[in-house]
Amino acid sequence: MKSGRISEHGFLADGRSAALVDRAGSVNWWCPARFDAPSVFGRLLDDDAGHWSIRPEGDFTTERSYLDDALVLRTVFHTRDGSVAVTDALALEPGARGHEVGLRSPRALVRVVEGVSGAVPVRLRYRPRFEYGRVSAYLAGTADGIEAIAGATRLTLRGEVALECGEGEAGAVFTVRAGKSYGFSLGYASTYGDAPSAPPDAARAVAETVAGWRSWVGLHPYHGRYPEQVRQSALIVQGMTYQPSGAVVAAATTSLPEEPGGDRNYDYRFVWLRDFSLTLQALWRAACPDEATRQFAWVAHAMGRIGDRPAPIMYGVEGERDLTEHRLDHLDGYADSQPVLVGNDAWRQRQNDVLGEILDAAWLMRHYLDPMVPEVRQLLRALADQAASDWHRPDAGMWEARDAKRHYVSSKVQCWTALDRAVRFGPRLGDHADVARWAAARDAVRSAVLTRGWNDQLGTYTGAFDSAELDASVLIMPLVGFLPADDDRMRSTMEVVEARLSHGGLLRRWDGDPAGFVICSFWLVSCFALAGELDRAGRLFDQLAGRANDLGLFAEQIDPVTGEQLGNFPQAFSHIGLINAAGLLTEAEERLRQGADRPRRTVPTGTGRTEGAR
Image 1 (cartoon, helix red, strand yellow):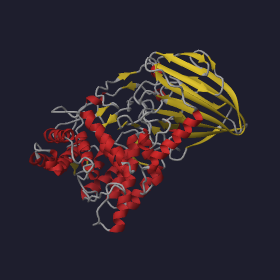
Image 2 (cartoon, rainbow, N blue to C red; image 1 turned 90 degrees about the vertical axis):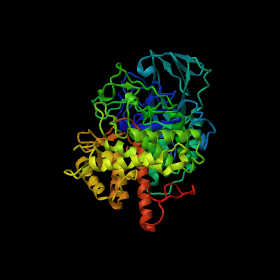
Image 3 (cartoon, rainbow, N blue to C red; image 1 turned 180 degrees about the vertical axis):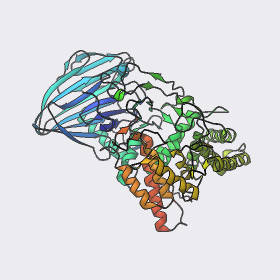
Image 4 (cartoon, rainbow, N blue to C red; image 1 turned 90 degrees about the horizontal axis):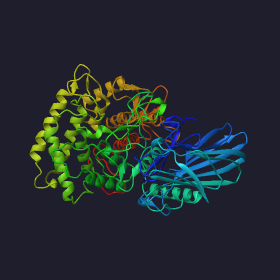
């Protein structure tokens, strides 16, 4: 049986890696060493790339949900013989609570099978394949389980049912009666590292994991609009955080296509600085300022001294810079979509928008950065200097075009953001802060965008200078304060972009984009909220939130006709867009109730700081 559709999968995480489990009880993706490591289960990309399934023998229907406030998935299978539940988790360290969650996870996948009613025959099939399906390990029975070793990887499976080993796989058929339960735990270790610890007891590990996630959620109360969706999205973003460094990966997968059968299939298991500012805003709005502070510290350490070189745009989860891309030609790809890629050559690109994202994040967090350490001061100065000198250069843009460089409007706007925030910081950036130069460059960028970014014939800002092509990225203009959302030209842009690029509430990035891009759709919600059109923004938010899968998960894109989720999954950017849109709707409603002259809160209740509108 092949892997299910993208939207059929649930997401598990432990602060180091992620696993995807489909509705039929099959673990189709797990890279246990860390998010961007080789998979041991890769059926998401090829039927022969490994999986671990537990499911009833005969026909069944399913219902599933996360346990409240935890990335622990419970799937109930209903058959003619009765019902059985499978609870899945990536184990957290016993006793880990609050901000300790995920720092020392045991790298174990645990599954508990429970009889709900009747007596249900269940089949377990365990078929590990290492190195993205390249390696079939030797399986050997031990006194209390099965060990699979090949190359650098060792897996140890323990369970309460005897498993029979075959060629590269193991399995069992057993009957689960009402009230009975069976636990299975699969532990990962490096073949030549320290002696592997015993996989945890499955039932205890599930209980500890639930307690750990709930303790984290309990530290982050959110009282705005759409609390259920915001809490769930914040938990997903936290699940996509590599806890040893605090870096948030863009997605848990590689090479899930933007269009089935297409070739725009990229590895998203890395950290993009483009996402940085929006991630910080989302964590702030979801009442997670400690995570936001860790994020900024990670970026400062990863970037180091940049000098005159173009600012790097992405990193590995521990700050690695060389992410050279290569193909996995032995894999068929999801829905026969090739190539399957590991690494991402976008790391080589110039993307000028990252300058604004870092400085905007620093401005957002300025109170937490005070007193500013010399390394951060030097970094922010260097980024501002680079924006002043390089804003006029073409780049690859936020959509990472791999053909020609262009003068993308969104990149220019983010250069303006970098310079604007640097001017606001002023002397706080040190004796070498060239505020006059930054201010002059800021004004030059603004003039250029207002002149060359506007298309009078279309009545909209376009994707690039002197262009007639629409691009949803221009919706960031009011989000960073470049223009107010109720500016006549901005309002016209919002109307034209929605009319020309939207279908069923989903906004494509450009004309010809194969599907709606989720964060762009939430940007439109945010723009309507900032423009005071709260009813319109709320209706669109509800429509978009209804596009998530049954577990509240978003991929990068959604087909507006079929509703099929497309692209890598789950996508942090999509969930960040939801959180920020909900936050802006909440703030807009508060301003409406309290009067437009009251200060706008940009940090959650309880942090003790308020700021005026930009």
